[in-house]
Structure formats: structure tokens, C-alpha cells
Length: 321
Image (cartoon, rainbow, N blue to C red):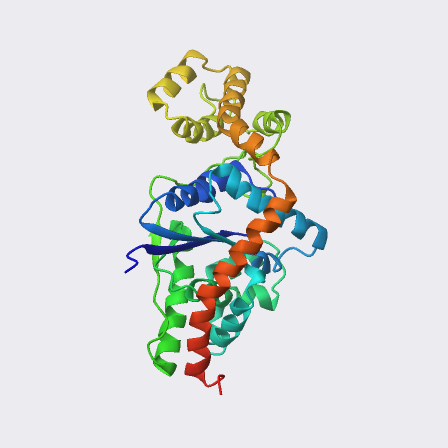
């Protein structure tokens, strides 16, 4: 009997990853995948990306990039199911079924939908029904655990509501997933002190060149009234932990160079480079043809698992004659 916990997580190919993505999503994924107690599904969420990205060339480029990012960060594609959402048509099929079970007022309560619209993103129907496609992503694979941040717990609440609606209508067939709150990650601050995010244009590129990283670091907003530039220090703390260094050493460094912002920023650049350079080198050695082969193998594995579930769902709702 397989006693492993099934874990699913994914990233949208909607842009270039930054160090906030690495510490907030990518590194926790690698840690989960390396745990022998887990059976890990990693998804390239390209259909989700369509809610905001309408450039086919960029979507293809980012899709290749996400797979390379996974592998560069430490994912072994032989030990996980690494697949592209659009390579499995069952996602959209189950998403439609779940849409037919929930109400418009229910979907209108989604925090992420309201937040994105408030930030100027078009209120398209895909963005509105996003929670049910995400629920389908999870439920197709009988997932036990979904890693989420504290601010993403509502996503799992929506999935559990979909499970409740389906099981009440058609019998207990869908498994209710649980959220896995990854401890010790926290929010990675951006160059302006807010959460690092592409939408805030305050990012430090994960796999950028050293010059690109330096340019971003030098743009970090500093408070000239204090001896310690808090925005620089808060990013540096995250990098120091990744290097396995004691924060007392970092505090001593900032006291020693009190008020010398350029020296502190230069040191941050070097420390980021220490973390990123090996991954960047590994990433550069991954070809597009290797990515296609990985996705092809992952699609087969994903379709086998999801196909079993979808066959039972079709029978339960009356689609299978």
C-alpha cells in the first residue's frame, strides 16, 4: 500500500521569476519533493496564465523557463510528476463541472479576484472562475496536501466547498485536500519594502546576470534618516538564512558599516550571487529539447492518474453512457 502523501503545487508561466518566488515558492517545492514521504506533482499552470498574459511568444518562452527554473533549483524530474496543465484536458473538463455546482455570489467573494481587479487587471470570466479550475487541478489527482501561504488559504476553502457540493450531489468521490502552510518562509520584501511582486515592479531577478542583480539591489529604497537601511537589511536576512549564516553576523556587519549604504548593498549583491550563481549555471545547461521531453513524460504520468479519477467522475454525473 502506498502510504505517501500526494502533494501538488505549481507556478504560472506569466513572467520571469524573482528571488521572492524562489524563497516563497520554488525552494519550499524542492524541499517537499525531496521528502521521501511525499509523492509530488509539479504543474506548469499555463491555462491560469491566460487570465493575464496574451502574448503567445512570451507564454512559450516562460513555459520553457519555468521547467528550467524547477530543475535549476533542485527538482529531479525523474522523482516527481512535472507536467504542463494544458497537456491534460481533464483539468478544463472537471473545472467546467465544478463551475456548474457553485454560485456566482460564492465566486464573487474570492479575495484574489477582487484584489487583482482592484489593481487594474481585466475582470475576465477566466479570472472570475479561476478558483474552480484550481480546484480541478487539485481534485483530479486525489491530492492530500497543497502548500500555500497564509494569504492563500481561501483557495483551499474554495476547493473544499467544491468537494462538498460535488459529493452531496453525486456521492462521496472527491477527496478533500488540506493546506500545508510552509513555516519559516514569510514574505520576501521588494526593493521598495513592500512584498516582492512583479505587479509592484520591485523585484530582484532570480536568474538575472550579476549586473542585473546589482542594478536591482542598487535601486533598493533607503531611509537616509537611519544608520541601518531597513529595506536592504530585510532582504539580506532572507539571503543570510539561505546561506546558513547566523543573523548575529549580519547585525554586526550592519553596525560596522553604519550609514555606508553602498558597501552594504555591494555585500548583498555578493551574497545573492553566492546563492544564485550555481543555479544559474545549471539552468543555462538545460536545452529546450530536454524540457519538451520532460513535459512529454510528465503528461503521460499525469493523464494516467487523472484519467482514473475522471472516468469515475463521468460515471457519477451521468456523462458516461
